[in-house]
Length: 346
Image (cartoon, rainbow, N blue to C red; front, side, top):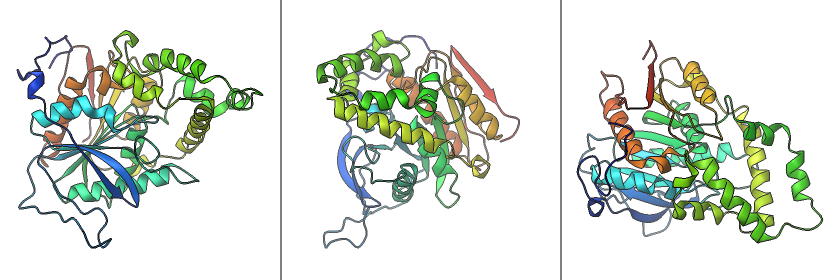
């Protein structure tokens, strides 16, 4: 696997765009939260709320597949759609995977008042238990999704085979996250302006900032993904709500991790051009979990699933294949522009 540009529209396996897997969309309930699920791989029918109603959907499985199931969690102010290009690649390769809208984002039910991370924990646990009926589960999370995955890995009762954490915050963070956490006065001043900022101004500013924050190269940002984020900032009121929620989340991150309890395989992915979570944060996470493995990509931004979905799909495939072999360490492909560091343990 290399970091060079590939010919379009062919994929590394020689597939054309028309060969990419179709993504199925469904709506399910996990821990009482109705959400949207994007899925590739063998068709499955599941019962996520046993005992509710007379029309119960049951899971029918002949045998657990040898290939682990990938469960993908997105970041803050994002949705399952961020994983669509990766899901297409995984589906074409025959790897079962789902991505879900986390509570409070995308088309999922809103978060309840109170702390956010415990609500995400309960939701994630329900998703994991459902998918574990269908095969071994490997989690992959970006940003807040990385935090959610790490917190799930801390729960020894959950049937998780391995975790890939991509740009999880809460260790050594960027100037922006430090500002939100330590200096909330600018945010409060913004929300208390006597006259709301016009919606078109909010959207114009957001349109300029979003590609810079999420991509390694803002010029390569795809309009469809930028629009998803722009839709979150339709006006002044929505923006102030999101900023206040972000401040609360950063405060919760201070006590989010008990990493000494993580015993399963962990791959920490560090993105060199990440403007939201510094590379030092990923290195710190790797240091705190001695058996973890570290992969550094200097050419990726905060959302590498948008920068390079083909290589992210390959990375997840290799990792999932590795953790499915109990007697071998996870396989991590080296790539041009990649720095790979293996710990002595694990």
